[in-house]
Image 1 (cartoon, rainbow, N blue to C red):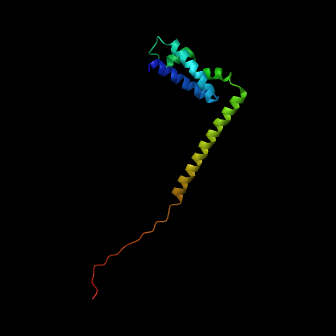
Image 2: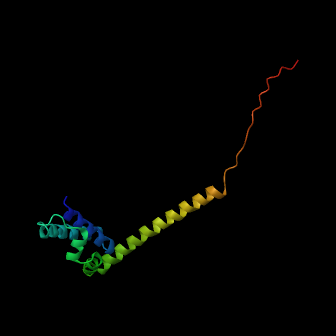
Image 3: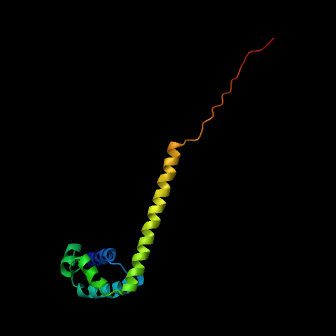
Length: 123
């Protein structure tokens, strides 16, 4: 994989971070767009990410353009799904922190048993 291909894939990942839509919708767009960009930059094998971004514009701006094409229903569903994921992660984090606090504040009681061995004979 050439440097240009890596830069294009990185650009698409950054666009993905900024857009809120169903994964299938983004995958369809990405497949066509990546192929188009590979054809467009096929002669240049050593474009850096900054050069690709300079040619195409900021990833956030591209995401805003794509966001305009997303239906309100799909946007709402994707936003709800994203919020649920964040809520689950936060809930798991709170449970983990609570468990660690429990382990630190309420240590288990330690019982010490001693064995004394006496080597004396009783007569």
